[in-house]
Length: 111
Image (cartoon, rainbow, N blue to C red; front, side, top):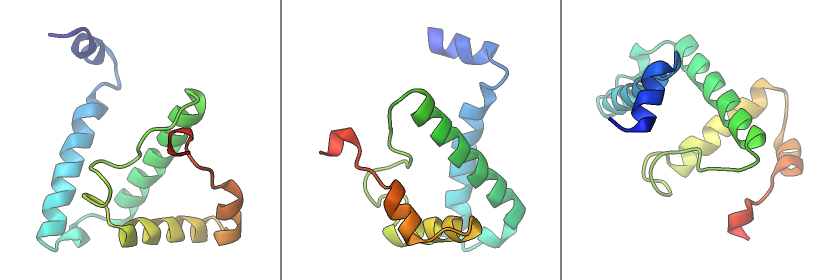
């Protein structure tokens, strides 16, 4: 057992690592079978809210960015899916493309 495995087993939040892998696998199966409706709107909103807050806390708190999606390019999330989600998040917060443009920044490794 590696040090990181031991650390996660002693961490009360270590279960999240395995849970997220299971959620991603189940979501993929649901989408492939056209059964996304089996998951409630509230459950999806809770997952998105938690993911967004954790991503920002890690990137701001650790002063770094990391790829927020699994896979390469549009391997797991298409541009349409990403932009649909971003549009709805902006709408939910009563923000528009102008506010997004003000906050948008290039990652240092993309310059």
